[in-house]
Picture 1: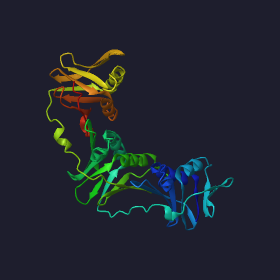
Picture 2: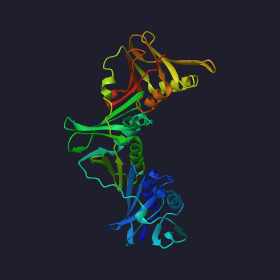
Picture 3: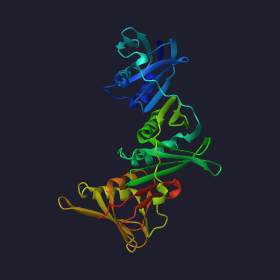
Picture 4: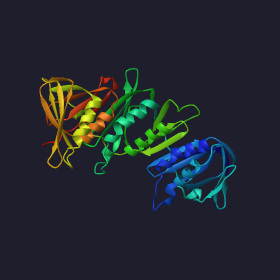
Length: 378
């Protein structure tokens, strides 16, 4: 194999694929990136057996071949090289990386030791706007569970269906203590209504690829999602990601979202977040509890916490409060995660009582984002 390209193209390709690799005592080849010539270009591929990522690097192929080398080592080395032409040549002792001034050999493993990458029989395709998708994944994925006791909660539920004259994609995640849901209109859908649970780690990797990818001018405007029977392929520019889907049924979360409320408050988001962070300093260890009081007569939301060891604090935030006076205790981490996922100047808090979940919406609500937090029962 002999291949020539620019340092910028190779560095970006390695950056796209290297993130899913890691140390594996039983299968050290999973820490490698596979090089394989492909129709005059070079395809880089990595896998951890759950996610496979590949990227096509533009350049010039002098002779075909394939080989795998440690991904992180090569990425770290290439990032230190000057911009300009790089040549990659496969020799007996390993992969030689050459510039005009530097010659380096990196030892790796034969291509036949690298796992076979999955092939996808595409059943349906959906085109999602890249910037909207990136924002949606950032607003939802953090709410997925990290416990393997309920595997279906460790992923993000994805629902694709026609809406109006187009198609809509809805993403939802929950760890049973809080729930995040985001709906966005997508550019096109092909095939039937689709629902699937995508592992949260795969969603984070998709968001990272969309954020990191750079073309000659800018990244593509759309991200293509292609579903197979038990797999999803996401294509963005020259990058492809294939991930397994999580088996099982996502809970019918719509049933737990209240439709009517006794108290509603519209509050400045930044002030509320700052007050919650202040209260978190005096929250009880292990409980992470802050107490909210919504008072329509005073037109304030009071955020308070107290701990025998550290002290206590209380902050009053003025806002539009309607309904009855209400109180609730929430986990400050869950509350601030939701506030941080919104970009609007104000948020709307809606509640029934201290035993029911709080619904938090961006204000105004055209953003089609919902965040639900379960209370801490006293």
